[in-house]
Image 1 (cartoon, protein in one colour):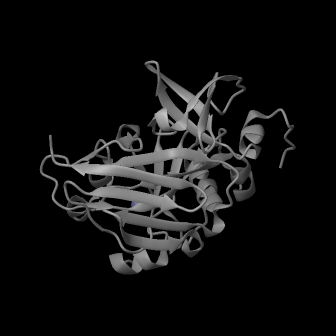
Image 2: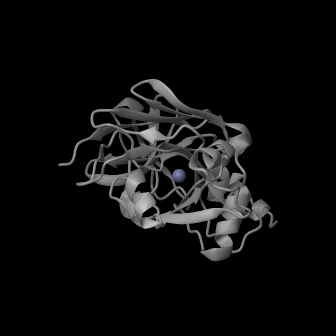
Length: 269
Ligand code: ZN
Protein backbone atom coordinates (compact mmCIF):
# COMPACT_ATOMS: atom_id res chain seq x y z
CA UNK A 1 0.00 0.00 0.00
CA UNK A 2 1.32 3.45 -0.82
CA UNK A 3 2.29 5.67 2.06
CA UNK A 4 -0.02 8.56 2.72
CA UNK A 5 1.11 11.81 4.25
CA UNK A 6 -0.62 13.54 7.12
CA UNK A 7 -1.65 16.30 4.67
CA UNK A 8 -3.87 13.79 2.83
CA UNK A 9 -7.38 15.22 3.33
CA UNK A 10 -8.99 11.78 3.46
CA UNK A 11 -6.62 10.61 6.19
CA UNK A 12 -6.89 13.81 8.21
CA UNK A 13 -10.70 13.83 8.14
CA UNK A 14 -10.86 10.15 9.10
CA UNK A 15 -8.45 10.54 11.95
CA UNK A 16 -10.44 13.49 13.27
CA UNK A 17 -13.13 11.02 14.37
CA UNK A 18 -15.66 13.65 13.22
CA UNK A 19 -18.96 12.95 11.55
CA UNK A 20 -19.30 14.31 8.05
CA UNK A 21 -22.65 15.92 7.34
CA UNK A 22 -24.20 17.46 4.25
CA UNK A 23 -26.70 20.18 4.92
CA UNK A 24 -28.86 22.87 3.44
CA UNK A 25 -27.37 26.18 4.58
CA UNK A 26 -28.68 29.55 3.35
CA UNK A 27 -30.08 27.86 0.24
CA UNK A 28 -26.85 26.03 -0.61
CA UNK A 29 -25.85 22.43 -0.23
CA UNK A 30 -22.80 22.38 2.03
CA UNK A 31 -20.59 19.87 3.82
CA UNK A 32 -19.69 20.11 7.46
CA UNK A 33 -18.07 18.25 10.34
CA UNK A 34 -20.28 17.56 13.34
CA UNK A 35 -19.48 16.81 16.95
CA UNK A 36 -22.20 16.22 19.58
CA UNK A 37 -23.51 19.79 19.44
CA UNK A 38 -21.90 21.80 16.64
CA UNK A 39 -21.43 21.67 12.88
CA UNK A 40 -18.28 23.22 11.44
CA UNK A 41 -18.96 24.21 7.84
CA UNK A 42 -16.12 23.34 5.46
CA UNK A 43 -15.13 25.12 2.27
CA UNK A 44 -15.16 22.12 -0.09
CA UNK A 45 -16.07 18.44 -0.29
CA UNK A 46 -14.57 16.30 2.48
CA UNK A 47 -12.69 14.28 -0.19
CA UNK A 48 -10.55 17.30 -1.11
CA UNK A 49 -8.56 19.92 0.74
CA UNK A 50 -10.87 22.15 2.78
CA UNK A 51 -10.82 24.93 5.31
CA UNK A 52 -13.24 25.46 8.21
CA UNK A 53 -15.79 28.19 7.45
CA UNK A 54 -18.03 29.01 10.38
CA UNK A 55 -20.26 27.11 12.78
CA UNK A 56 -23.89 26.38 13.56
CA UNK A 57 -25.66 24.28 16.21
CA UNK A 58 -26.22 20.69 15.08
CA UNK A 59 -29.83 20.88 16.32
CA UNK A 60 -30.52 23.70 13.83
CA UNK A 61 -28.86 22.00 10.84
CA UNK A 62 -31.13 20.79 8.03
CA UNK A 63 -29.32 17.54 7.28
CA UNK A 64 -29.39 16.02 3.80
CA UNK A 65 -28.17 12.60 2.70
CA UNK A 66 -24.51 12.82 3.78
CA UNK A 67 -23.16 12.33 0.26
CA UNK A 68 -24.48 12.62 -3.29
CA UNK A 69 -23.42 9.32 -4.87
CA UNK A 70 -23.10 8.67 -8.61
CA UNK A 71 -24.35 5.18 -7.75
CA UNK A 72 -25.34 3.07 -4.78
CA UNK A 73 -24.07 -0.48 -5.19
CA UNK A 74 -25.96 -2.98 -3.08
CA UNK A 75 -25.28 -6.52 -2.03
CA UNK A 76 -28.10 -9.02 -1.79
CA UNK A 77 -28.01 -12.06 0.46
CA UNK A 78 -25.02 -11.19 2.62
CA UNK A 79 -26.30 -12.24 6.08
CA UNK A 80 -26.87 -15.89 6.83
CA UNK A 81 -30.28 -15.40 8.51
CA UNK A 82 -31.61 -13.33 5.58
CA UNK A 83 -30.44 -15.94 3.04
CA UNK A 84 -32.41 -18.53 5.03
CA UNK A 85 -35.59 -16.42 5.26
CA UNK A 86 -35.48 -15.75 1.50
CA UNK A 87 -35.01 -19.48 0.82
CA UNK A 88 -31.82 -19.01 -1.21
CA UNK A 89 -28.64 -21.08 -1.39
CA UNK A 90 -25.54 -19.47 0.11
CA UNK A 91 -23.83 -17.52 -2.71
CA UNK A 92 -20.18 -18.24 -3.47
CA UNK A 93 -19.64 -14.66 -4.71
CA UNK A 94 -21.41 -11.43 -3.69
CA UNK A 95 -24.67 -10.79 -5.58
CA UNK A 96 -24.63 -7.10 -6.53
CA UNK A 97 -27.18 -4.69 -7.93
CA UNK A 98 -27.52 -0.91 -8.27
CA UNK A 99 -29.94 1.59 -6.84
CA UNK A 100 -30.07 4.81 -8.89
CA UNK A 101 -28.80 8.06 -7.36
CA UNK A 102 -32.38 9.40 -7.65
CA UNK A 103 -33.50 6.89 -4.99
CA UNK A 104 -31.37 8.62 -2.33
CA UNK A 105 -33.11 10.66 0.37
CA UNK A 106 -31.79 12.03 3.64
CA UNK A 107 -32.65 11.70 7.33
CA UNK A 108 -36.27 12.56 8.24
CA UNK A 109 -37.31 12.77 4.58
CA UNK A 110 -40.46 10.74 3.90
CA UNK A 111 -40.42 7.39 2.14
CA UNK A 112 -43.39 7.84 -0.19
CA UNK A 113 -45.26 4.73 -1.27
CA UNK A 114 -45.22 4.72 -5.09
CA UNK A 115 -48.58 4.34 -6.85
CA UNK A 116 -49.61 0.70 -7.08
CA UNK A 117 -46.94 -0.63 -4.70
CA UNK A 118 -48.36 -3.00 -2.10
CA UNK A 119 -45.81 -4.60 0.17
CA UNK A 120 -42.93 -2.17 0.79
CA UNK A 121 -40.20 -3.56 3.06
CA UNK A 122 -37.46 -2.01 5.18
CA UNK A 123 -33.93 -3.45 4.95
CA UNK A 124 -31.49 -2.00 7.49
CA UNK A 125 -27.97 -1.95 6.09
CA UNK A 126 -24.48 -0.65 6.86
CA UNK A 127 -23.40 1.80 4.14
CA UNK A 128 -19.74 2.15 3.15
CA UNK A 129 -18.89 5.60 1.77
CA UNK A 130 -16.06 5.80 -0.76
CA UNK A 131 -13.51 8.59 -0.26
CA UNK A 132 -11.16 8.05 -3.20
CA UNK A 133 -11.39 6.67 -6.73
CA UNK A 134 -11.25 2.89 -6.36
CA UNK A 135 -10.52 0.65 -9.34
CA UNK A 136 -9.51 -3.02 -9.09
CA UNK A 137 -8.48 -2.63 -5.47
CA UNK A 138 -7.46 -5.32 -3.03
CA UNK A 139 -9.44 -5.38 0.25
CA UNK A 140 -6.51 -3.59 1.92
CA UNK A 141 -6.45 -0.86 -0.73
CA UNK A 142 -10.24 -0.62 -0.53
CA UNK A 143 -10.05 -0.05 3.22
CA UNK A 144 -7.60 2.81 2.68
CA UNK A 145 -10.01 4.43 0.19
CA UNK A 146 -13.08 4.41 2.42
CA UNK A 147 -14.21 7.72 3.92
CA UNK A 148 -16.44 6.15 6.56
CA UNK A 149 -19.79 4.54 7.29
CA UNK A 150 -23.44 5.54 7.31
CA UNK A 151 -26.86 3.97 7.88
CA UNK A 152 -28.86 2.87 4.85
CA UNK A 153 -32.33 1.52 4.23
CA UNK A 154 -32.66 -0.63 1.08
CA UNK A 155 -36.42 -0.09 0.72
CA UNK A 156 -37.87 -2.81 -1.48
CA UNK A 157 -41.21 -3.36 -3.24
CA UNK A 158 -41.19 -7.06 -2.37
CA UNK A 159 -44.04 -8.11 -4.68
CA UNK A 160 -42.35 -6.52 -7.70
CA UNK A 161 -39.01 -8.12 -6.79
CA UNK A 162 -40.65 -11.54 -7.08
CA UNK A 163 -42.58 -10.71 -10.28
CA UNK A 164 -39.62 -9.22 -12.16
CA UNK A 165 -36.94 -11.77 -11.32
CA UNK A 166 -34.41 -8.90 -11.21
CA UNK A 167 -34.44 -5.99 -8.86
CA UNK A 168 -34.10 -2.65 -10.67
CA UNK A 169 -37.78 -1.73 -10.44
CA UNK A 170 -38.44 -3.16 -6.97
CA UNK A 171 -35.48 -1.33 -5.41
CA UNK A 172 -35.12 1.68 -7.71
CA UNK A 173 -38.11 3.90 -6.92
CA UNK A 174 -37.48 7.52 -5.97
CA UNK A 175 -36.96 7.66 -2.20
CA UNK A 176 -36.12 3.97 -1.81
CA UNK A 177 -32.59 4.68 -0.52
CA UNK A 178 -32.59 6.68 2.72
CA UNK A 179 -28.99 7.42 3.82
CA UNK A 180 -27.63 9.19 6.88
CA UNK A 181 -27.59 10.94 9.18
CA UNK A 182 -23.85 11.41 8.59
CA UNK A 183 -20.66 9.61 7.63
CA UNK A 184 -18.95 8.32 10.76
CA UNK A 185 -15.19 8.13 10.32
CA UNK A 186 -12.68 6.11 12.30
CA UNK A 187 -15.07 3.14 12.77
CA UNK A 188 -14.10 -0.55 12.66
CA UNK A 189 -16.99 -2.15 10.70
CA UNK A 190 -16.24 -5.76 11.61
CA UNK A 191 -18.63 -6.17 14.58
CA UNK A 192 -21.23 -3.40 14.77
CA UNK A 193 -24.74 -3.87 16.15
CA UNK A 194 -27.20 -3.29 13.28
CA UNK A 195 -30.86 -2.78 14.16
CA UNK A 196 -34.11 -1.74 12.55
CA UNK A 197 -37.00 -0.28 14.54
CA UNK A 198 -40.53 0.34 13.26
CA UNK A 199 -42.52 2.70 15.50
CA UNK A 200 -39.94 2.07 18.22
CA UNK A 201 -40.27 -1.74 18.11
CA UNK A 202 -37.15 -3.70 17.17
CA UNK A 203 -37.61 -5.70 13.94
CA UNK A 204 -34.05 -6.55 12.93
CA UNK A 205 -31.10 -7.03 15.26
CA UNK A 206 -27.82 -8.51 14.11
CA UNK A 207 -24.10 -7.91 14.05
CA UNK A 208 -22.04 -7.06 11.00
CA UNK A 209 -19.83 -10.00 11.99
CA UNK A 210 -22.62 -12.23 10.56
CA UNK A 211 -21.87 -10.97 7.03
CA UNK A 212 -20.79 -13.57 4.50
CA UNK A 213 -18.54 -11.05 2.74
CA UNK A 214 -17.00 -8.31 4.89
CA UNK A 215 -17.31 -4.61 3.90
CA UNK A 216 -13.81 -4.12 2.45
CA UNK A 217 -14.01 -7.44 0.55
CA UNK A 218 -17.24 -6.17 -1.00
CA UNK A 219 -15.67 -2.86 -2.04
CA UNK A 220 -12.76 -4.77 -3.57
CA UNK A 221 -15.11 -7.17 -5.40
CA UNK A 222 -17.27 -4.35 -6.80
CA UNK A 223 -14.19 -2.37 -7.87
CA UNK A 224 -13.17 -5.23 -10.18
CA UNK A 225 -16.40 -4.51 -12.09
CA UNK A 226 -16.91 -0.75 -11.88
CA UNK A 227 -14.83 2.17 -10.70
CA UNK A 228 -16.11 3.60 -7.44
CA UNK A 229 -15.71 7.35 -7.07
CA UNK A 230 -15.79 9.64 -4.01
CA UNK A 231 -19.27 9.79 -2.54
CA UNK A 232 -20.38 6.44 -3.97
CA UNK A 233 -22.03 4.16 -1.42
CA UNK A 234 -21.92 0.39 -1.01
CA UNK A 235 -24.86 -1.07 0.93
CA UNK A 236 -23.66 -4.29 2.48
CA UNK A 237 -26.87 -6.34 2.73
CA UNK A 238 -29.55 -6.79 5.33
CA UNK A 239 -29.85 -9.32 8.17
CA UNK A 240 -32.89 -11.47 8.93
CA UNK A 241 -36.18 -9.97 10.07
CA UNK A 242 -37.28 -8.05 6.98
CA UNK A 243 -40.90 -6.99 6.91
CA UNK A 244 -43.41 -4.50 5.53
CA UNK A 245 -43.85 -0.81 6.23
CA UNK A 246 -47.32 0.72 6.56
CA UNK A 247 -48.25 4.31 5.77
CA UNK A 248 -47.80 6.38 8.93
CA UNK A 249 -44.94 4.23 10.25
CA UNK A 250 -41.63 5.65 11.42
CA UNK A 251 -38.66 3.46 10.47
CA UNK A 252 -35.25 3.75 12.10
CA UNK A 253 -31.95 2.14 11.10
CA UNK A 254 -29.60 2.20 14.07
CA UNK A 255 -25.95 1.14 13.93
CA UNK A 256 -23.60 1.24 16.90
CA UNK A 257 -20.73 3.76 16.51
CA UNK A 258 -22.38 5.08 13.32
CA UNK A 259 -25.75 6.64 14.14
CA UNK A 260 -29.51 6.54 13.75
CA UNK A 261 -31.43 7.17 10.52
CA UNK A 262 -35.17 7.88 10.91
CA UNK A 263 -37.69 8.27 8.08
CA UNK A 264 -41.48 8.53 8.11
CA UNK A 265 -43.48 6.41 5.69
CA UNK A 266 -46.27 8.22 3.86
CA UNK A 267 -49.06 7.27 1.47
CA UNK A 268 -48.95 7.82 -2.28
CA UNK A 269 -49.21 11.51 -3.12
ZN1 ZN B 1 -30.74 -5.03 0.68
